[in-house]
Length: 441
Image 1 (cartoon, rainbow, N blue to C red):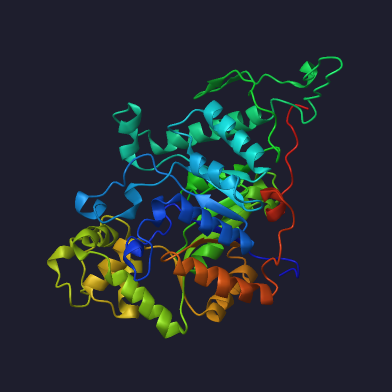
Image 2: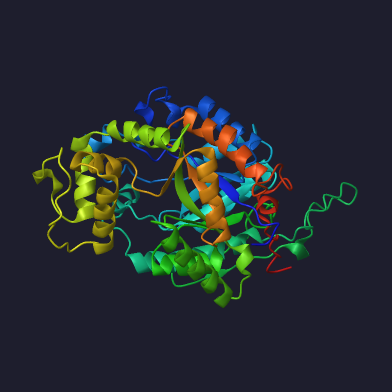
């Protein structure tokens, strides 16, 4: 590993925690997901800890879940990302601001304007998380009876990217002369009209906003499927993923970097940041105990359905206080998912109820331990090229966030694998990314 290579850290905070029982944990703030004052203080703490960015995900419908589960979820009410990040941009100075915008249920001109505006307002800290929207319930909120088919969504997304980046390049960087003597506000020779006509989109342009501070806001993508990986390799500068373990993370990392190189891109200009829940305790046993306490606050009645889907069989027929049966029927669903769940149940000795609470709460990857043990793991992932950094998720607020910024970050800084201060003022500078040249000037 080159001596200068350091971790990049972003924080995913919509919802403030992906764990469905986070709002019930002792000492947690139950309204944190929809309280601007709290979100402002959290973001300022992340900036003081020198995090690269705050990532605000988005959904265009309530989660596709039974009401029994929804009524216990803190995700049912969240701020719209652009409104939230615009407000946060004026109470922060350096931290990047990543917003999700859908290529399926939005229009390129809208997205280009919003991100250009956020980039100017924030002084060059905006990033666009490109999503095709996988929740089929979203379609009915936009006048469509059926959700757009998967491959069609990705074809539209690829054109969408070309249109948005083309619109950002409508003006040359020096187009606005603002000469009060001659009365010339901008040079018309430095204005480009896009006139895009494709299979899915038709946009004339130009954009009615000056070129963004960063040239283009940073491009972010999180696709796991083959079309999603290809889109990421061709367009993304930050890639979110959800690995099961170190081995799968290394394979994903190598695949994306290989695809990026094949697309003619510099591999170091694609930063891969797996999502990970980080839960810190005074000892490894204490951290595991906190995780068990947190999971125990998840309703079994609302989580058993999630486990049934993961296993491909009806779990409600099993004794919830006994271990998972070893002779499960073969599934027509994901065999990989079933094997992973069974492996977890065996290794941790979980009952059916405990397993359901784990999967109903947060089935993603997690680092559980002390600041030192977690720093060891993060460093190993960096050295073994499984990650360029991490998208940090918090188990509960505010303690979970405070533990990361006050205990883990100083340990990473002591080891020299995380910055002591920001390298510049823009998100591209934080990530070591070049400013894109204008395609037309």
